[in-house]
Image (cartoon, rainbow, N blue to C red; front, side, top):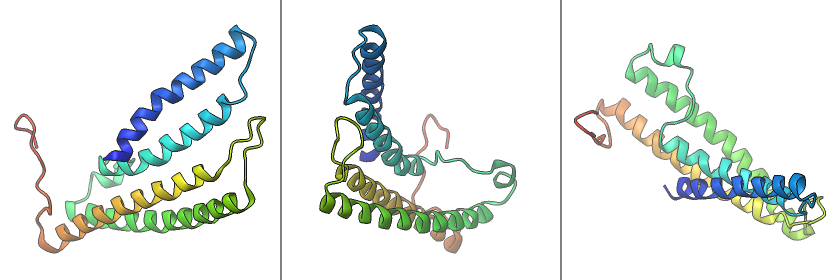
Amino acid sequence: MLSGKWASILMPILAFVVFFEVLARYIFNSPTIWAYDVSLFLFGYVAALGGAYAQQKNAHINVDILYVTVSTKVKNIFNLISYSLGIFFLILVFYMSMTKFNEAIHFDYRTTSEWAVPMWHFWLMLCIATTLFVMQLISNMIREAYYLITDTDLIEKECKNNEC
């Protein structure tokens, strides 16, 4: 997924920005005015864009003590419930982000730092990230519902080295 690729590209850039700021501040005694804002935005981008990717790779946390003890059909029901709750929450985040994006454009919101970077791009990215996440959850819901109805997987799982 493209969002996961972007998140993985942004992570080393974030690490470099933080490293550079520590070097500039503590070694050369000359802190930058931009590193805090850049690292804050990059961290937000990585976290938001990585959410849909983590969902696609099934990397989010489950309550394993309960989840692993139930049948596949009950797991699918649990997944459908959690996906529905996730979509509800993400729709709220999308609405808030779109509102903040429009305000940031209209009122020219900027960070409170000395650099005073415009904020609109962050809210736009959050709108895109929540949309991608909702799309991934809907895709997962379709797959789970299909299994509940037909008792077969919608998409065959790929086997690697004779392990499925």
